[in-house]
Image (cartoon, rainbow, N blue to C red):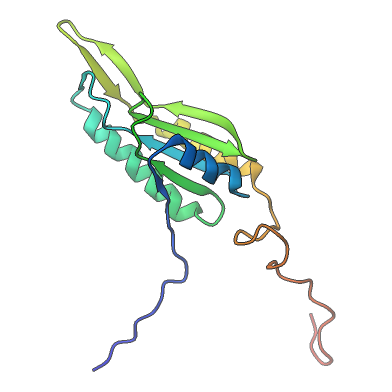
Length: 163
């Protein structure tokens, strides 16, 4: 018995970069607004608070959910490089320029030591993600950047067909 294998209607691919230069190149060459999530677990200067690991996962999961929902309208880039001292940071770009930033990390001064605290400011992230859609170029093809792939205006309906 043969099963039909169907291709998914739409796929979501997220570039994973290791350097700021790679991320900048993607953002500058995109006609779409962009969201970049920097996750840098290489920064182990201080220990993490008890909730930090859970909050890193929540940030990653939100990034994935947004990417699945808006991949056709926003470029999503995951930066796993170690060039930054930040542990978790969201950046929002429109027309090739940084428009907003949400930093999820801070240093907490406990009684005996400093710790890195990773937060999950989901409402702020949602707000900035929806705001970045203002920079979307409506009517342009997401594949080629022009109007060549956009649907042509339909002419009058054929004889005998009413609108």
